[in-house]
Length: 81
Image (cartoon, rainbow, N blue to C red; front, side):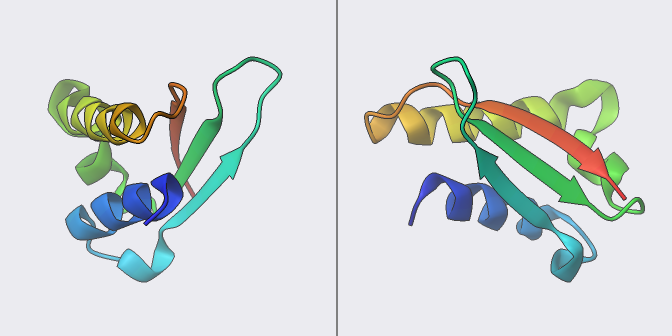
């Protein structure tokens, strides 16, 4: 499983509309790739969490995955539609 698939698995596990989750990975000008997570507006609060705790946890898990697989740090953006 690649880092994009891992991120998608985590996010789909916590939302009510897993079919509406979209995860894209982009290369940036800097060293760090960017992972863009887009969820349904009804699920946005569940992904962010109170005080951003769930979003921070997702970022921590994805960074740990990247570290264990000798990848550079990734930046994660979360948005809704």
